View 1 (tube, rainbow, N blue to C red):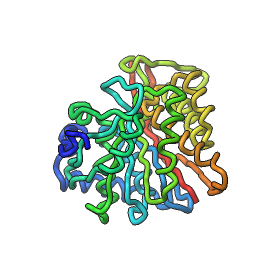
View 2: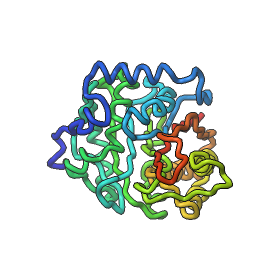
View 3: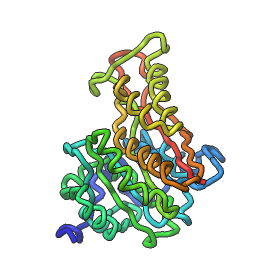
Length: 305
C-alpha cells in the first residue's frame, strides 16, 4: 500500500468555492435538489454515470443538482469520480493516495482496495497531497456525493481519479480499464466537467454572428458537443473538439466514459440498452460583448437498462 494512504484529503476549497458550514451547505444542497423539476431527465432507470459541473456552487450548484437528483443511493456501493487536471500536467491518470476525503457534511471513505488494484495495472500514478487538495474538479463533487448518499453513510466508498491530457489511444486504454466497473450496477461514475469557457481570460473568443448573440453562439456550440455525447459518438466528439476547439475542460474524462461504453457495446452478448441524456444547461453570464466572459454548465445522465 502507498505510504500516504493513511492521510486525509482536506476540504481545501470549503469556505471559498462552497460553504464550510455544515448546516448552510446542507441547506443549499437540499434546496437545489428540491428545485429540480419533477421527472427531469427521467429515463425510466437509475443513473449509472452522470456528467456534472465543478465550478463554485453559487454558479454551478443548481445545474449539478439535476444530475445528482437522478441517483438512487440504494443501488450504489462505489462512486468513481473522474475529474480533469487543472494544475499539473499529466499524460495519464492519477489516483488519490489518501484514505479519507473530508467534506463539511461528513467524511467519505476512499476505496483503498480498488485504488491499489488500479495502480497495480501500471497505468496510474499517485497524486501528491498538494495536487490532490489543489484540484477542485474532484472536490466540488464530494459534498454532492455526500448529500445524495447520506442514507448509506459509511457504507459506500469513493474512487477519485485525476484525468490528464490524454491521447486518443490513452482514452481508449482507460475506457477498457474502467469498463468492467461501469458494467457493475453497484458502481456510479461521476464525470466532472464544465463546458465552454468563453472570453479573453480563457483565451477563447470564437464567435459567428450568424448564430445570434455571443451567448446564443456559445449554447449552439455546446449543444453540438452535447448531442454527440447523447449519441454516444466517441469519434464524432473527438472530431468536434478538433474542429471547433470548444474549451470543455472535462473533455478527456468525458471521452474516457464514451470509450467505456464502446467497450461494453463491443462485448459479445452484452445487449443491455445504454442511453445518455442531458437534462439541464446554463451559463454563468449571458455574453453580449467581446469584453464579457462566461462558463457553461451541463448536467447529463447515463442509464443502462
